[in-house]
Length: 633
Image 1 (cartoon, rainbow, N blue to C red):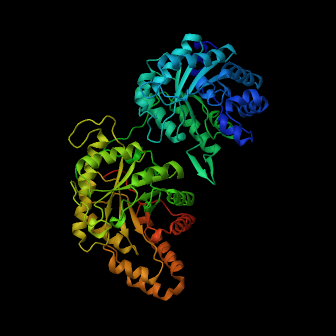
Image 2 (cartoon, rainbow, N blue to C red):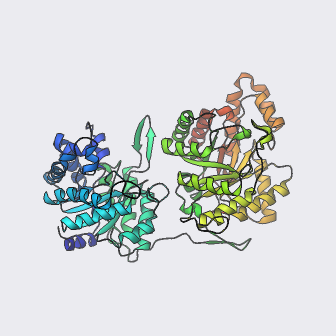
Image 3 (cartoon, rainbow, N blue to C red):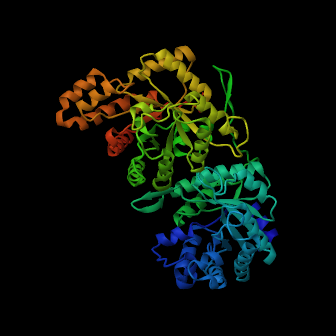
């Protein structure tokens, strides 16, 4: 296929691609002794059968099983000398399976280029030339340089392709959860650089799932409207279940997004990891209903809102945030967040296991405390990173101002952002005088409202406290605390209003045992400041015994346990835990239409109780939470 024919083909799109080769082979029960690419030689019938299953599902655009068939990756398996044979076989098998368009798949080399690695640009080009020559020589119709994470490496692949053949070239990138490549480039930066390369289309593949891929395509189209687009997402975010990685997006979900990809400008639409023939068939059926692309592929951008009460222009970052927690708030879902304490050791294995349990129960996020009660613990951003990486659930990082100077505050926040943490809960923190090291420094350079302002109006704008550039802006969603049952409600409301003006996106409350304090707080706040639109997640702490309830009531500042609860627990006897869960369930249900969700605080680290509560709440089919309409409004 020449480049002119390809241009005509995509202009008449949509063209249906195939799905994930590796995950589909595993799902089909194919044993992979070393590398998937070697199956072209060792199990050709299995590879051909996979191609045929996608073709029967409607795929016209069929990729060869050669994603890792370059000299560097094959060298890890002692097969560097088989580059030509494996790639040629890949093309032959796709052709024999009946593919209309055989697409030569070219993945990353698996090594880093100078200056981040030791492979020079010319060495990378030679490796790509070797693979591309084999694919083109065997009769591939076009080249798909895919799942790229380094624009410089992608450039070397394009240069190599143009040096050895005249086939159409698509270059496609994979992005991390924060909408950046692994080397930190935004989709806009990628679009600008790719527009300077001699390619026929640019795509987004793999990544975190259809919603993110759509968002990235829109960003690329805004930046470079003239680029032809390709969309091939994973079947949702990878999720660990029972020791296996699964992709849970349904075929119908992928079908719905296929139409949205086309409307956003994509001409070639398929799938990546986790997408099987059933997904591709659903996407094809959905695309068959599309008659034409909208005349103007407009992309809806967040519009700065004006707060009528204060006359402030406020950007709503929740609406564009990438975490599932922020997404739940922005969509008005009734959110469930569970507080977790990091371990008093260097191992987070038990914490991760508990987070997996909570994720499976339906929690939207876990909120990791920072040295609760001023006790020595693992730094919470490490725990957050491990939980997000291994349990596939969003986290909220507790970030106290106490004990940090301005240098450390900003450095720690940037480090957290680099680890993929996007949600932070700003608080004062517990005084060191009550903890393990009462002699430790206890100063604070900035108040919680000041820190909220620093994050939202400086770091999230690409600036440090002094106004100097930090390069890319951070994308933090910021929470604050509120005591809904404070003894001085007027002062508490004044402080909360200050935090809202600073840009707070959500709030956690102290634990409540009835809905009355929340109702009273709202009424009095709104009489003074106007409608309270800040999403509030109400603290819910199940009591497990009378002794536990009495301790909370008498010894924990900010917590008031009503007499009715104390009386109920006194009569519960050895059924205290069961009774406490029932009380928590009733309290949470009462607050549904007054809150954005629940902030569950498991007593004594009994995370299974939080999981049980979440499952019971979900079984009630609760209505949407009172989530407000974005940050600081």
